Length: 189
Image (tube, rainbow, N blue to C red; front, side, top):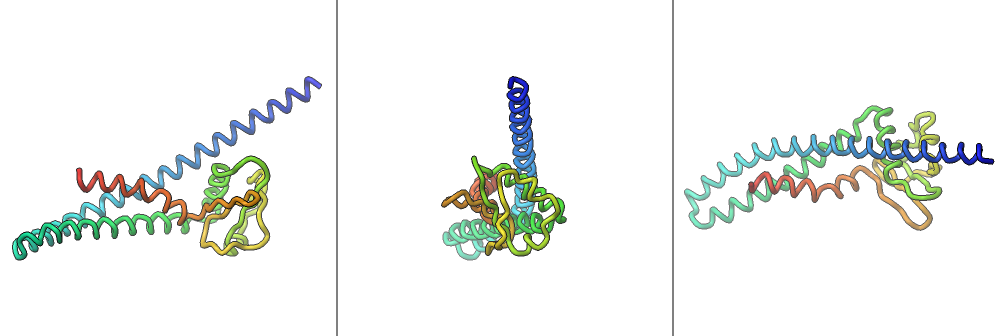
């Protein structure tokens, strides 16, 4: 019995180590994508900010006190446009990944978001139609739902009555506050 206990303990340790590695890789990849989107947004923001300042200076010369208000409005508008472009760019990059990379991201994301016990992954019809061989096996206790979810990409994890939205749009939306804070610090530094 001690041998079986040792084997089971070793399997549990190996499984925990692999889960931690997958989670670290998924977080690192998400961090890289966020860093690239933030850097691009910062570059685009600098160009947009220069244009907004040029326009604002012209307004100051012709409109006096009202120009300061217009400058703030233009900066806010440019900031929102750049944020929208950065989010769209990040989503486009994720959606355009080759199939192997796309499903690799989904598997790592599922591992990072998984909860205790068996769960169900709901994919879009497009993703169900192109599932690579062995993908379901990589999900552990998460089964793939046979019916499609009405989502554009990513997946929804279901554990009983609890649904976790892991679509790319939802994930970018969650990170948008962080991106806004970083751009705000850059614009008004």
